[in-house]
Amino acid sequence: MTDLTEDRPLLEVEGLRKSYGDRLVLDDVSLTVQPHDVVCLIGSSGSGKSTLLRCLNLLEDVDDGVIRFDGGEIADPRVDPRVVRRRIGMVFQAYNLFPHLTVLDNCALAPRRVHGVPRGEAEQRARDLLETFGLGEHVEKYPDRLSGGQQQRVALVRALCTRPDLLLLDEITAALDPELVGEVLTNVRALAEAGTTMVLATHEMSFARDVATKVCFLHQGRILEEGPPAQIFSDPREDRTRQFLRRVLPA
Amino acid sequence: MTQAWIPSERELDRRDVRRRQRLFSVLVATVTTLTVFGLVGAVVLSSPGWPTVQKTFFDWHHAKESFPSVRDGFWINVKLFLICEPIILVLALAVALARSARSAWLVPVRLVAAFYTDVFRGIPTILLVVLLAFGMPALGLQGVPNSALFWAGVALVLSYGAYVAEVFRSGIDSIHPSQVASAEALALSRSQTLRFVVVPQAVRRVLPPLLNDFVSLQKDTALVAAAGIFDAVFAARDYGNYNFNYTPLVVVACFFIVMTVPLARFTDWLQRRYAERERAGAR
Image (cartoon, rainbow over all chains, first blue to last red):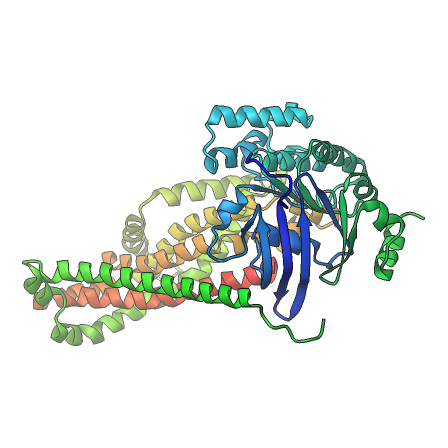
């Protein structure tokens, strides 16, 4: 991991715009993420949370705006996206594990092939992390053998094995049944407490309230309101935010 | 939201960079292509034997002279292909389904199907063509055509049916068990599951290797020349033997290329359409 200076934002987004054809998905989005921040993106489906995350690690070309990562502009077409992605980890809603590789090989693939970590070291690192995440007994299994919650935790470990400076989590509990949500969120919470910088889209409001350092409410492609969780959840300024929270929070 | 959006300076600059990057890759493509083909051409044209080769293989006069008979012979290749291909598809799918049947009643069918693929994939196609085209008419069977052409076609169907059956089977095997589970959960029967869920997906997945076998079959229709049937290759060799010139063979080659290219483009198009429709541009 590179040294991150505390006073400089790790990620700065300014005036980000993204459209698919006529449909405007992100409109003038600005966001600042400091090292050790846990930023939660909330909002109804289709509000642009996933697209924003995909823009951040350059899976999507942006139509306008600036994305600065660790001080450098990364949305520029002259930037090699792979150089950026080496430092950003991402976990998807549908796990997206490689079904033809064992859990261990899933986790060791990028460290070995992209980061040039020797096999023994990469596998040891993966084993240690899997052990920490309570997956020690599944190391040699293939992903389809595991439960959804276990698979998602493996996906989390896979993203962590490259020791990223920033972790992007795209509704990682949305495909899990409630019983399994807990085990994944426990892992994420531990990461947050250990100081991992994260941007996550989530529908788990109580989790966001507990763990986030900043909550952003997205509506129709814009960040309508942002602030510390205490403020957003108990005293939202915007009507839209209030309506949204009324719908998703138990009375 | 509704006010017109004016791209920022930065965005305009990015578009400029992207345009230049695109231009650069077009340039690279053009230069490398010209260089490679230029070099190959130069090597061939400057080789010591080129004048002789040009006279025996690329003679315009002989190309024109042999064209009509090659064209007439080629019609046989086209007919063979057009008739054999649909039969092969049906036969191969039937064999593949028979091999993946699970019912106890169908064990004999499964064994026959396995035996068939083992045997007919093992025999060289040219051997099968010669054996059937010469052997079967000699039996003097009643009720079936006794022409060599008919039996050569049968040989192609049997040989290719075995190959294509394996392609289908690998496609069927590659469909994830969860698909079968969800079809069964809807109370579809085993055969309905295959027909409405598994096979349609399998066929899409094996389209490229299937095309490979189609193209291969188009070319292998030329094997019937070995049984003395007057197809394009036989006509070309016939002409060559009388005129001591091999240009007609090159003409035949051109005929075959012209026939296979449209099929390749058609499959590309079909694949793209499936991808657009079912994956909605996901990556």
